[in-house]
Length: 107
Image (cartoon, rainbow, N blue to C red; front, side, top):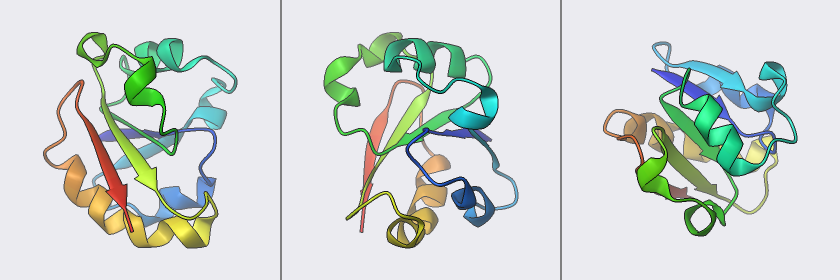
């Protein structure tokens, strides 16, 4: 499983995922600043899931055309400490996430 973290998420989160999950970031890929639609299309070529805190993605995108699963994190902030409690649930969701599906994970 290959997962892409949005640019608004801390890089340190990469260390918290299960060992069988390869985690990349928008910043490391050089995709920072790309619009969501373009970002999701190019990410779908290399990743199985996209993780973000952008609550607007479901309303901004035609998800039936997006070939990547999306997990939207809902936490008090995008600080590492606020997101850590969500990662075990994210690991669980990744096991059944399908292309074009969007799920929310909240603390």
